[in-house]
Each structure stands twice: as C-alpha cells, then as structure tokens.
Length: 124
Image 1 (cartoon, helix red, strand yellow):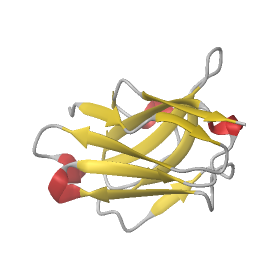
Image 2 (cartoon, rainbow, N blue to C red):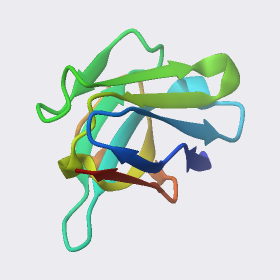
Image 3 (cartoon, rainbow, N blue to C red):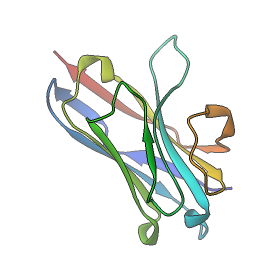
C-alpha cells in the first residue's frame, strides 16, 4: 500500500501548460508502476499515461500523446505529468494511481491505490 497526494492543478488558458505532481509516502515507491487518469462529472475515469517502475518505459492515451509527458523521480517518491498545449477537453480531475509490479498498464482496475485528485481547468 502507498499513499498518494496530487498537486499542481489549476486554471489555464487553452494552449498553456501545467505540471502535475504526485507525491507518495512510504519507502517502496520504486516497486510501483504508476499512472495518471482523469475524470469529468458523469463520466468514468479515463486513462492518460503510465510509467514503469524504473521510468524507462511510458505509455499514453492517443488523446494526449505528443502533448503530455509522464516521468518519475524515485529518489523523491514523486511522479509527474507535464501537460503542454492544453485544450478545453483536457478539463478534468486528474488522479495518480499505483500498482505493484514492473509492468505499466492502462487498465484502471489494475491500480490498487489512488490519490484524491487535482482539478485541471482549461478555458477557451
């Protein structure tokens, strides 16, 4: 089990950038593959990006590929989501998820722990 806290959300204009952070507690962060998901009211949680335990491999949803970058600093127990060229459709609550194992996955059900989310709002 790992505790996760997201931060960095806010209000930006279309075309702008934000950098989200997910800080993890505990001393086993490097054993978790991590992911970012997002959710809007009335919709199910949507996969955004994932990264393996060592940070060498990443995977992105087609909707954000080329605009978002996921990374991690295991020594700081932190995973990041750099969001560039933001669009109004990116507006959502962004959640950080963790799962035990080296493989990255886009399946929400395979993540065992979640943060409380951080709001990202992109205006036109």
